[in-house]
Length: 443
Image (tube, rainbow, N blue to C red; front, top):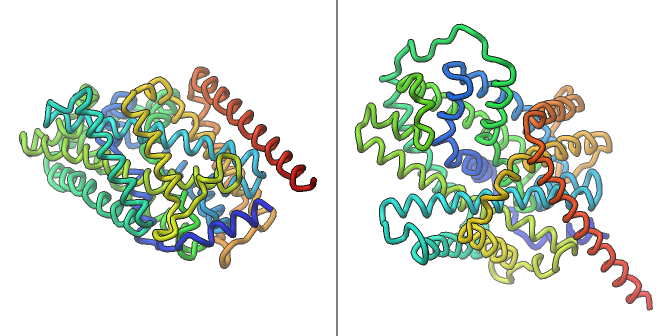
């Protein structure tokens, strides 16, 4: 019944996202403000051997996104990873995946929006705190919510525009900075310790994350069995090359000093070969990148709330589709309000660590779901994506995720356990209500 209801509800949505728009959405969600600061952390952990972490992350993400591609080509319902897990393992496990997905995204977007407000505050001190800061955050979330309520195409165009805008300063950094790289700054003679590699990968892997956000509007993707795999692999290839180039230029320009500039390493490196203008360009690029991430989140994350409403786990009003614009307008508005409240209060900082462990647990569930969908030969629209050894890839992906998780802390696992326990209670209450409704209808 739930599956039929999901399909009927999703039929109201417009399949308007093709390879270019979905690829740009994935790149936008992946290339966030983090890449502007992470090179320093990676250099601190591995020094000139930093490329090792990028290679390991790329291999890990290749296995993971291949599993996503397999699952995404077999399940075309709105919800992305949530929908994949739900179809594979049922509504309860699917709901847990949805909670991890939405909570990770709403905490992350609240933090990123705060970064945008802070960047504006540097330029206009009057909005650095208090009412001025709240007004900036309100403008950010209300304008993006308005754009996305008016149509998925408008939201996708905004994401595509922001993707180009955020990539330009990074491409400038690489194109000019490569001529100032010092060869001796990139040399290393000894293989780093295994623990250092693991901890650095745990830090860096989040620069590669974000695909789970962009895949939420799966019910609005054209020909998902082809579009999802193509977009995933194209976006991963682009981001991997981009990240490697950024790290090599920053390392090559600043050398061992790169690890000292933890707040703005790329801005510091740019100032060495472009002066103060270069620093300003990168700082503005950081703000644009952060705003681009927020625009991508407002496009995608509300669809998770839409699915919760569609499946009657949360109020069904969340599954309402606007009669004119054909978008889940109530879910978009609710998500934007919650993210705004978190950003204004800053209480999200105490839970931000959850996004670390939650994302990896979500990946673990989705890779397992890919294997189950293959085993059951679940099919959606068209012939599913298939490659040699497709049953082995999700298993390898699960092993990689478990290895990365082994470097997380006990505190992170405790927070995740509490959240999943609360989600379990919420799910149980929804089932009780469903039984009561059925009994009343029977009477």
